[in-house]
Length: 451
Ligand code: AMP
Image (cartoon, rainbow, N blue to C red; front, side, top):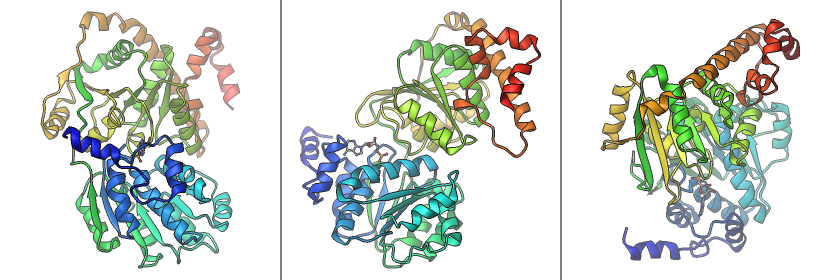
């Protein structure tokens, strides 16, 4: 981009986009000095009352791009149950709700977050108060539409589908169609998606009326401020290399992505056994635990977040210096979304993908779709292997702890078992020097406490 056009972009203000004074003031309160590119493109069109299809990468400011015009138009014709935003995951829904609440408080707009994992009766009572906006995951919204007496969306003015590609790939098509059938046809619709898949195109045809397309990024692109590297390591020493990497880049905030919940759990236990401030986020944790873990990371209380792809999309996690792919993602789309957690808004960042002998082919496919060969993260094998003994001990304790968890889950049939942040009882005991004693007693102490 030339210097002049860059300057032009900086000259654009929220005021110049036509937003009311209250909302402009609210953006300042959030520290948003100038609109991002997607906001510059989408807001003027939205204020004309048009439907929008927005293709925007994660971290582009798309939540503001659809929230600000909806709030502006609410102020022009105030009404309860004015808009619904649908999002694929509970975390994303909660974040959108937070943005709508923060911006909306300036104009007295109320938002309610309606997601699974939260008491449905309490939600029904809150819905009866008729907030201006409902931010929901598809399943729970349909549940309320079908079962909550007195709740309907017959006068809805706005529908926003966020991360539509993700919602469709998670098989929410049926739920989305159910919602489309019970809302007015003359509503305004915004559809935001990171990628334009054939399913998104079909949904666009079914739900949007003469939309304007706004696009700020092309598919499968990473930003230039992102350093992308790989580490080719033997499978048997994968954890050792992970620990080495984190030690080398100590002091940086990191998200480590794993392919399964149990990998996330295990890696968390290992790192915590080694004294690192790690916290876990995956789909088998309840909603309050997930949000609790995320908040600990966001507040800086924990510097390492180990997450499955649940956390890789849409989450508003600021200032991440490092993304580690502990497992190679299964496709390039997921790779882009994962590494999009760093190097945001012009900052620099690093993404390192750990590749074992079993993942070479998968990794090469990702490199091919990125259209470039990545550099190796430099390391000296001897220095890595110095860590082996300590990592092996941490692995052993983690395995022990996970076995205990599995046994406990079996006993607690039908119930959901989670410990604090997916954390390690063994690590706590070790810290308090009680591990040996408990083991000698055949673990009775732990069993009694857990019951
Ligand atoms: P989103 O893509 O909506 O998830 O936004 C990504 C991040 O950018 C969030 O942390 C927002 O708070 C932040 N953000 C959104 N709009 C702006 C803006 N105009 N200026 C600065 N930061 C922004």
